[in-house]
Image (tube, rainbow, N blue to C red; front, side, top):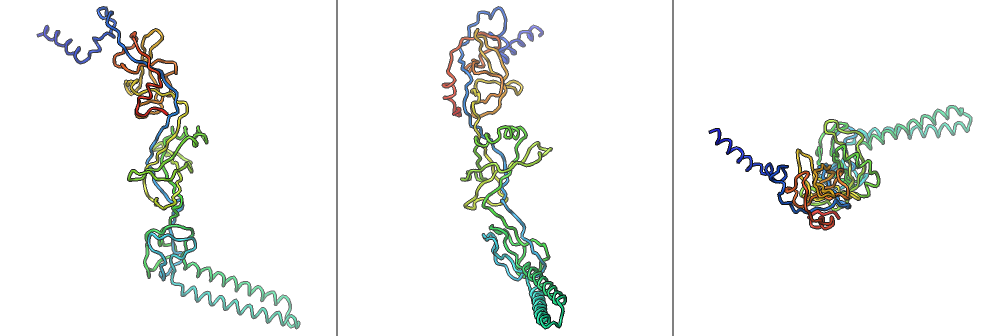
Length: 367
């Protein structure tokens, strides 16, 4: 039984791990093994379009609660839900009986003070009263007029008007409802320009700040709606939040989109898609790489024809190319076809494919 295991175990290992018994092993009986014919190419420098997606929330540029400025019964409602209004339009009218009566009283007091002043001025001309008494009547008139002005302002509080052009949301109260001061009647949204918020990782934020204005010129911002369609208007970065979220490591960005046709509404969701161009990026085909323990490697063939394994750092990944951050030079020859046939330290026969030809055959080659 022991002899049988000694024969079977090596056979199983050879079947599962053929490379353990391949020509890459420095064993004497394989010294004369035939060399592999492979294809090599060079890294290339291209301008690469990088696309990044972020989940976003859409907000109106101005979105406010419309509240009752004073308590009372709702006497009139001049709007419908979802209606567009202009700045200064009356939205609600609160029952104004008490304020109208108060205004009439104050106007009468002002009229009385005015008559008293005229009478005092005539008497002063006849030297019956002194100038000081006339001054007192002038002050009394000014006070009465101020109180009348205050009553008029209080009366105006019963008219709830739109502070800007916008769209009215759902009505929270109906005709005849008794409302208190400060109670929300509806909301009003200015949808002419939409503020779209999305969260950006710290690394991307640092890259954006490092590029500055030049980076903004090399990027295009699109809004993808919930049904997958693209919003027709382009956007631009409007603001960056002051603080990072310590729990997520993200910071909020705001993109501004004009909304001339009113398609976007407050509270929608979507996806921000940022296209940006990397100038003079080093790119290689993905098929030239292999992965070990979440690290990427290539085989670099030296002038002596010997292939050596080298780690590369990937900056960005597209459909079928990698943008290389570090690890390769433009003069390096990397194995393109036949990566699985090559062993580290093995001499190889190869054909050279120009980098332009290698990238032109890919689906997502750099422009």
